[in-house]
Image 1 (cartoon, rainbow, N blue to C red):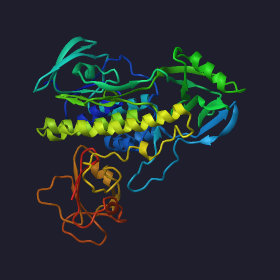
Image 2: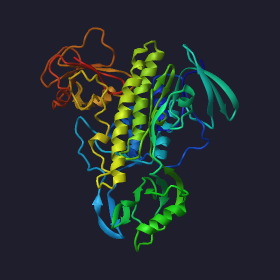
Image 3: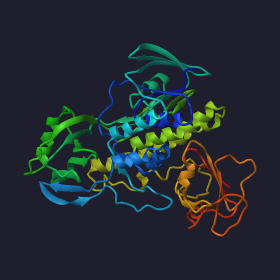
Image 4: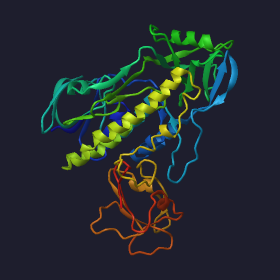
Length: 473
């Protein structure tokens, strides 16, 4: 086989999956039918759990440098200032949750950072290359491609569809995409400049007698553009003129000229969930498996979590252990269904005019994702994400649990006990100060690790490669 995995679609989901496979030395190709990368901001909210994934993948510093925290939104009704608010109030970091707040960065820039990281592994996106068809058998997938060099047939062990809501992979596999499309609600979304406005803040302009219907502008880091959103009539043509008409309607006496439209689209509530995320050697992730309303900032983040869950399982299957891959569909489909419920409920609030419609609370941060069997009542943390905590090595140097987890391996933590015979390389003893034991150990100076894992002497915690708990004993 020329490659072990073919990834179709080079958005955040496909790029994350390709990086995770490449760092495991899995031969991967990633194709995208578009000839140019989309410049639009689209999913600009990066949730805390996704920041943890980016930490593991080695791009968190770049994402932090390029992005910004949630902006203060300034509301104006009939042109008069009415107050300020945030979609969510900042939360202080803790030893267990080092990145508790959403981070904002236009999706185009996030994808650029992901592509640069993927290139470090010698893999580049093959643009202008489309999946034409495929057939699968018990041993692999044969795919027909069409690209700049003409027609090509490739043979791979697995095919991953991360090619969006109109997924060719999903359609060809015959997987139903269940859900609804609401033609009564449409939003015009785009990226524009509005140089009359201070770029350090976001804005909401509306009529005083209808404060929940108006135009929102959120600053995009790294330039002077805003992401703009507004409800529109069904037959409107997405354009700078349409945005300017709405701006003039709601801005009151202020003259705010919109310029340099770089991306625009009309979004409608197309809320769907694939009946299954796997069909033999074909797997779905991201928008190919579930499409969300923009409320709550869940779509892109859920797709990235799909890829992070899938990468290590594909690697295990390629190395002869198929059991982890069997859990991909039930684990991620259950999470996607739950997240769709959250974002759909927030959309309902928005269309009903509720004042808290854009609020983003703990349920949107994706730190409480769990893959635990409902019958398992043990609970060492919200969900079953493995918490972070500060430690010290034998030389007194600081070490984080996230430092130990970083990489493509599982991690075994043994609290107050010797390592079992034959332990894998990434196995560590974690001791309280003053405890003695033969051999090297990490010291839980302030007890945060023991507290986070509810650990007593002899507790053993296996952390999966995706940073979720495999077992606690």
